[in-house]
Image (cartoon, rainbow, N blue to C red; front, side, top):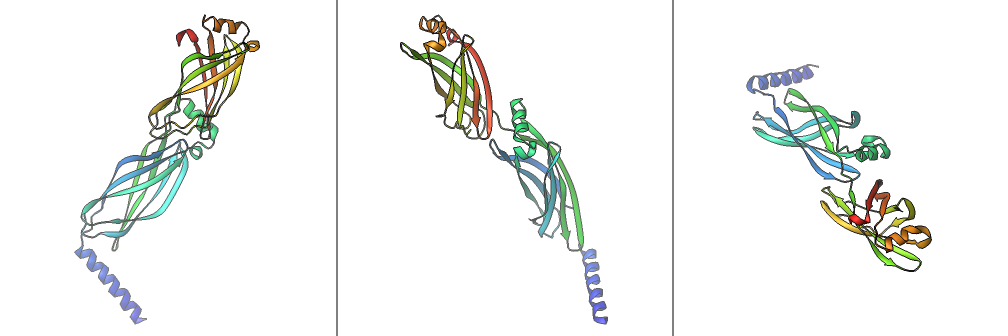
Amino acid sequence: MRKKLSAIFLVCSAVFFLESCVDIKQPQVRFDRTEITGLDMQKARANFIFKIQNPNSIGLDEASYDYKLSINNLDFLEAKNNKFSLPANRESTVILPVEVNYIKAFNTMELFAKSILSGQDSIPYELSGNFHFQFIAFPISIPFKQKGVVPLPVLPGITIKSVSIEKAGLTDIVLNFKVGLNNNNNFTLPLQNMDYQVKINGQNVAGGVAADITDIAQNSSRDVSVLVKTNIFQLGEQLMSVLNRKGFNYRFSGNLRTGDMSVPFDIAGSSENN
């Protein structure tokens, strides 16, 4: 019993001695920036970067942090007891890496698609938590809270560059719809196919699926030729109008599929303007 008391006394004495000899100052924590490290149609990867100034002559091998992340005002992610080192007498950079899955953030694919189709380009986040430091017998916790936005991907731009007669025969005609596709994202946009319906002068004349559409590189555009074949029985008088080069009105509508999302389009124009 006396040995235990002696040991406790020695520990307390050592702690008291350290407290009297070491002037421990609180580290300074500041949020530096949010860095988007990756983005595609399914997710965003972000680094929340903090700067921590340790004014003490004692460094730490196992400082730690915990945090909660809410996206769209809903609890999204929680992390606890993440370790990092904190050198003495210097400023350090601490990075909190996070991956935001868009479908999880919006709860459903439908809500995600509806949001970006309406033109929404970002979602709000709130990051809150604590940094923990244990300087010998001096535990210190410093809270933090940061708000900002996570970017959303940009939908591909779809335009009609021109409409021309590819081939005309006795019973059928092939129209070439030159479709312009534009990718304003900093990542390659994966494309699967495009289904379409065509109206000429208000009359349904053809529909189909363009399956030979390849991905679009980041921040670039590309033209795709969609060949629409119809016959004289579908066109009727419209065929004569086309062949006589009097011009015609068209409506080109459908869906472009990228990833798990369908991007609707509905473009009206006149062959006289192409």
